[in-house]
Length: 319
Ligand SMILES: NC(=O)c1ccc[n+]([C@@H]2O[C@H](COP(=O)([O-])OP(=O)(O)OC[C@H]3O[C@@H](n4cnc5c(N)ncnc54)[C@H](OP(=O)(O)O)[C@@H]3O)[C@@H](O)[C@H]2O)c1
Image 1 (cartoon, rainbow, N blue to C red):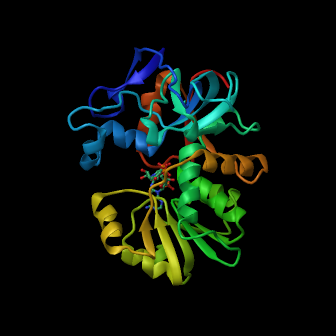
Image 2: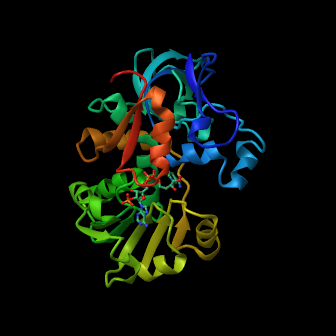
């Protein structure tokens, strides 16, 4: 099969298309023919082997996993032993973050606990946009308990992959949602359902008059003091984004019950919940750019600039 592989840490050009063996599904896995994938910040972090401490698990000198790709949508090609609820031809989507990546390839073996049936109303490209970003938004928003309609919620980074889902997911629970983005994206966040918008190029949400019961910081560019300043009494913030070691350590060391760093680990249960919201018309992926598989390095380079408008997807075949 064809796959994009990398054998040393580096920029997107480090990736090269190669012929590799098609994997076989182990017990409890299915082999998926990948029809679309989306790119995530995790792909370029892992490609570059940054932050450096992550190489302790990724591979000290060389990457352990040669094929990147967390988010996929496709068709079940074969099932491993013990898998009875899925069969060849089923349309699925999956998150491979905790399962060794491998999505940037014609086929990948996926543990059944990392996938779900794909929402029928989405194309494969749209479905591939969902798992990691929407799963992270979901887990970040509910980290401090379910949202309530009487709450004020702020989403920092509201037009990124995670943020564009977070605005819609927060609105689906009923609270008043304030979205922080840049000037060119104000209309986009309004169209996602935001009640209020803050243009971060002119206004600092931590120094305005409004206070929030919940903050989801998908960017990770604010200090704990800034986040606390913007919280209402008893309010809580979840930080899913990562911009620098200083900020990451700041939240880890100076945060606490009210300001928490959150790592998402998306499961079948989360994907099923997202599918229900999608089928009910309450959640819809926004696609910024579509790339051909052969142009995957360009897709990752674009995302790495940090200003994608929602999701960037890659088509392995027309869907
Ligand atoms: N914790 C986890 O499990 C987890 C999971 C997924 C992702 N992440 C991390 O979360 C971060 C975001 O991921 P993503 O997929 O949403 O990234 P993304 O799609 O690249 O989006 C980045 C967004 O950040 C916005 N932004 C840039 N500077 C900003 C600023 N100063 N203030 C407010 N917004 C700003 C950009 O909006 P403009 O274009 O308007 O500037 C853009 O929409 C990454 O660091 C990623 O590694 C963590």
